[in-house]
Image 1: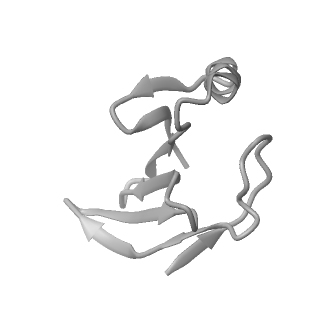
Image 2: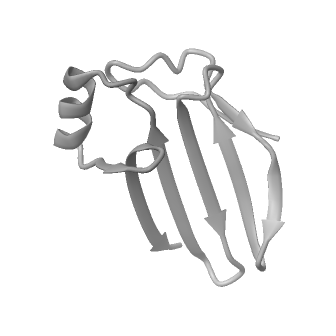
Image 3: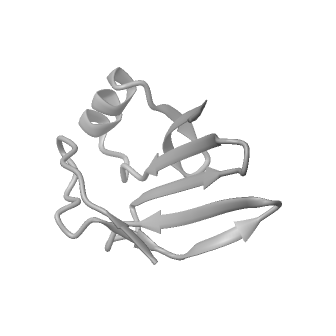
Length: 89
């Protein structure tokens, strides 16, 4: 299992994110969630050093939180506001 704790304005991640590590389609993948389940982070890595991250945050129709997340680069999606990134080590 993997665990991450980080301060993000307006979100209570004091207990961090945790979840299982697994292999999926040749990639190591961590599917992490907060205690409430409203915040979900999926991280994946391949053997060549490529990584992907997807952070989904449910906002429960909170217009102030939705506006703040939009300013931070999040986009509305089917399971909340989404921020995706990828890169290479």
